[in-house]
Amino acid sequence: MTGTGWADEATLVLINPIGNDARCWDFIGIPDGHPFEYPGHGSAPRRPGWTHESFCEDLLAAFDGPLDVIGMSMGGTVVANLLLHHPERIRSAMILCSGSLTASGYTPERQERRIATYRARGELSAGGMEGVLEDTLSRWFTPWAVRTDQPGVRYARETLLRMDPAAWYDVWNCQAISPALPTEAFREVTQPVTIIGGMHDFAAGLRGLGEAHELIPRSRYEVMPVSHMAHLEQPEFVRAAIDRHRAWAPIGQRVEEPIGSAVWLSASDAHRPDRRN
Image (tube, rainbow, N blue to C red; front, side, top):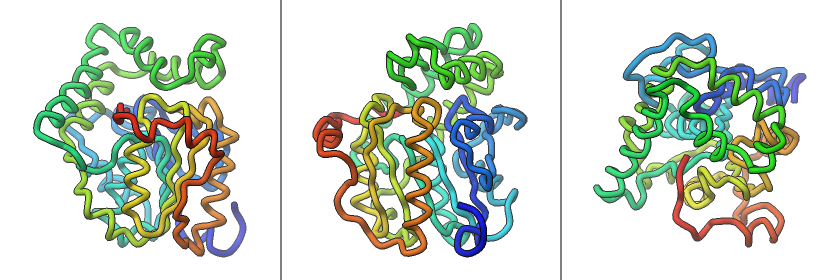
């Protein structure tokens, strides 16, 4: 949505997933969107030791005034950090296909497993980026998309292979060292927030997103028949969801029930353990 009015009163910032760069948003086509890349992704220089919070500070320094933010996968975690730690700069937000956003249920043992999982994924690049492809593409896309080598899969493969293996380790280390967000703090979020979950997202699941929707007062939650990398495999669904968000956000009243086909919702993994991304 472009033109005059509400949509022009804030800058729209697009935050990509791990292993993507600014070009990933070309699959959707958001002419007024401003991609912002992680260190070591695309044209952004590598910076070992970066965290969710340090990235938020970089993002806020790069743009003036109020922001509308859209985050895919880990980008959704960044959006949650912005909402909790820098609410004065955020006007509205959209979180898509992200894993659990809060510290709910984080026993010390689960936290140790979480850190070990993230670091193991980062270490897959030790012998070169070819070592991350099979594991990563199988979590990101449906088997059909990988088997038929869809355009989004080709983009992801090419982008991963161009990436510095050390930068791949850095971004997973960021996931490991960045603290989980306090659960109750989500109740204090005042901005309108759309949350999107994927029925076929077996990397992040739906449980954590459903919990965030229960906590955030002015939120709406859509479950769509999409994979984890929905912006690459099903871009038309994501573009339509963004348009719906931007039509709803100026009013921003809470939508209590999840939105989506009853079949999608009943087939979802809302009651399975969250696998995280």
